[in-house]
Image (tube, rainbow, N blue to C red; front, side, top):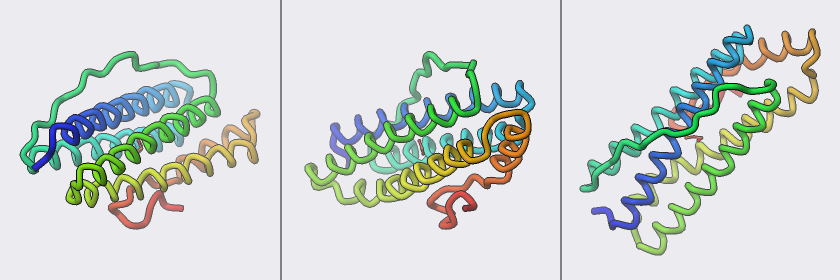
Length: 174
Ligand code: OFO
């Protein structure tokens, strides 16, 4: 049984996962419109992954006696300046999600909710993987560059990264 405090925190996490789903979907669409097909394919996949995270929390709340709520999605940005901006924004967004996951974990200790603590461990591992992945992509952007030739190579490299989560054990194909 979930306490009201934990249920509210999990519903707030649903909002964050939903925002990430649509944020990355908008970025994927922007990349596709710029003929950055590898990046678009990676970001569509990542958007789907965030959607899966959201569903995971829906299911957990409802099976634990709570009520998972559909969030309102507001202010999705559709235009971006560059591939570098996109991945900087993603890392920033993931760091905020990690903070939110960590706050729920702390709350679980305070409330002695060990079932939710156990459930959240998956998200702790997932966030770690995502942070590593996006830092690595930003390193590649610096290394390869974004001039005419660089962008072509970079887009291909990003397109080859497989999206996968902590649940698959193997991470993001690194
Ligand atoms: Fe849901 O994994 Fe990042 O945000």
